Image (cartoon, rainbow, N blue to C red):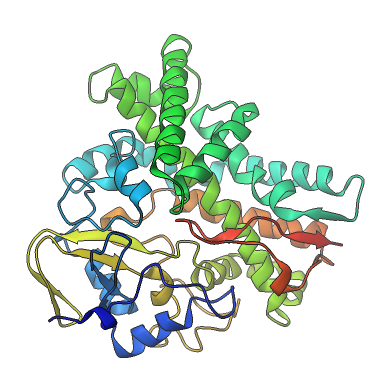
Length: 403
């Protein structure tokens, strides 16, 4: 199956229409051309997949590779293509059996039982942040005062990273996620983060604590399964993923609930709906606008379209989560729907390792806001809010609220 240049729109697709919704063209492609060519920054033309059923099947198919070292991997920017180095090639960018072996090193850190044991501590952190936010004012930037520090504090405690360094790694992790940044700037940010974590891992080797990095050093580096730089790379992936994603999901979730008539009030009246509301927020507000990147290891079919070995594939989970064949009235946020088939955390062997932690953080954050600030309201109209475009993570720079 071939396509002319006019049938291969530039990707990422331009953000048009309501900022709370995917670009309208994405829905048109899902309806009319669910597997179609798009054009990347370097002129390469990977396949874009937009239907829920096709993406779910593709993420189970071992013929699609996550390995960035494979020829044809669809890099989304020059910065991403040039910045991918050993520091980022951990299990996230590997295929089985390499992926399986490295992921297993962290599985116990993120099992549901262990995450549930942290719920009381996360609840206490939520309350402490809300105490500080409401102590002297009746308005705040929810992103700065609450959404960003909450997951940052939690992942820092888990990893053993001093929270007082959060401004250092937050600035650099945002640079790493920016697909519009110059390759040199991204490489510099990555190098500084890697150097910081190599140094921290060395400190853990001398004086271990009850944290993930200490255990990786003792259980994986010391026996020779990982090098010091591989430990730092694994920690780097967890540090970036552990705060940027959840922080923006909190901001978008609060905004979406406020935008959809009656949804915030339903939760205030019935807090038991919070877990279902979190799943619906995850479905409705996709924070990964570019989707998941893969490359075909061999010839295969997706949705009846032949994908040749070495061709890139972009799996648009945001489009899948708004697919009317998977969810009734998908553009409406409905906290009472069963949204558990969403793919906000991916699917298959690469499904997000940290999803139990993310769910608890989102549930705790939302429950705390509803309990402490039932009259919370967004202080600016939607069109005046500052959304994050041009990166691997979508969200809000600021979210002014009052109560």
